[in-house]
Length: 266
Image 1 (cartoon, rainbow, N blue to C red):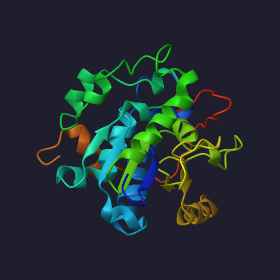
Image 2 (cartoon, rainbow, N blue to C red):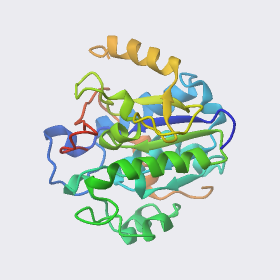
Image 3 (cartoon, rainbow, N blue to C red):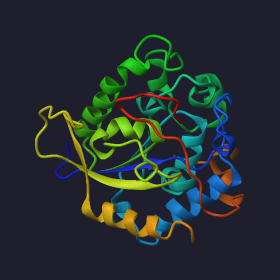
Image 4 (tube, one colour):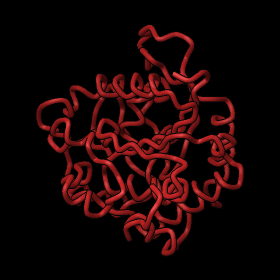
């Protein structure tokens, strides 16, 4: 672990299944609105100084679902293509439910669409199966602990994690004492964290507990108050298409999950 490691947790942009809570859509793509959320709410905001540590970003960790891969390229694609910020595709940060919308595509198809990414982590075990094995709901607490430990042991000092609202509730369970609209991540919302100084299990996200930084809490208050207003080389088309094709208005919401009462999530 690097001293004072900073972790930025990011939910993906609005995807097509978010529009009508259609859980049967297989591995949904971002909507035009979702693409704009990624550009304006993440890429442009970070470049404009909204997240101070953006200039020191060293690693992007991303779920292998299509909507999170799109989000990562829209927000951090320039840094990735210039060779400044590598991407690690990590199936452990995929969404929690076994619904088609939360089940990824085959590695073969992902390699064709995102040829510049390394999907070897998805070949370690069957990440597409959630009816049994490591990715069942019964193992969500273990999976979240494994991810926190993995992040804790990384040498980078600033890491972005592009993931899903349901899994985020398991990653920092102490932040979600109630299943309420006010708590859940909005599409393309991000929050900043550091690791707690102790790693013993206190029942609230430890071991390797992530603690939200004060600036992040305050920024969210401001944004929520105004909610109503508001690798080097030639990349593959899916990796950059949304950068020139985003349109619509900012907004979007989504489902949420309770670590004590797993339900349908995305």
